[in-house]
Length: 317
Image (tube, rainbow, N blue to C red; front, side, top):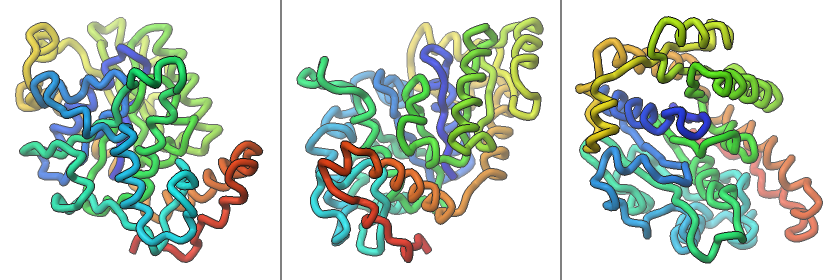
């Protein structure tokens, strides 16, 4: 099962991601939590600030090369790592990231905590300022997810703020896109934008919302009127625990969250379970996106025809 937590900057999606991960870990799930936001705030809720080693960032050039080399395996359809593009799918010669195996070689890029494994995509390096965009960083996350065997495991991703999931294959990699919304006009417009893009991408059925910072009945009524009732999974109101955590810092503990808000995360997981897709269904979406991506003129001019990277006979089973 895969869940992406999305939303605008400041909506509280990182806090929601952390609480969701802790709830799942509490249920005994084999869990991988990934920080895919360029601000890299998620590790600070699980580790003392600054204790996630930057050399483990997935988007560091050396790390990216190591991961791609491993995933490529003996895949002869990939001529070189440069032709291992963001939508390149796995084949029977690829090496997969087996999420339920803590001894897997790629786990060296995770911080394995008592309840979960944490990975971080990473942020800009000095040499990239003015010369790169965050889409380049997210490409390695696309590769990792597309080459991941996550049967009997759960992935939660705190996505980059905004709608960048639709600029890549990421929107097709998840069973549930959980959009965190505030009860404001901006929040209302964010829902409209996400709903429009999700419809165009064919993933509207996977899109649901969670209200955050809904402090009174007026906030609740506003958000209830802003989107279809069947798409709103619930609302998080005033939490003394979260307010204290924001002010004083410290590591997050799900058990300290108010009981009525703990129930919201049970509802989110139940919704994700009803939407869970077979690995092959995700793979079919990836094939379609790969064909679209490699059909672009600049890709064909630089790398030639990469549609041959698709192995129609490959199966995760």
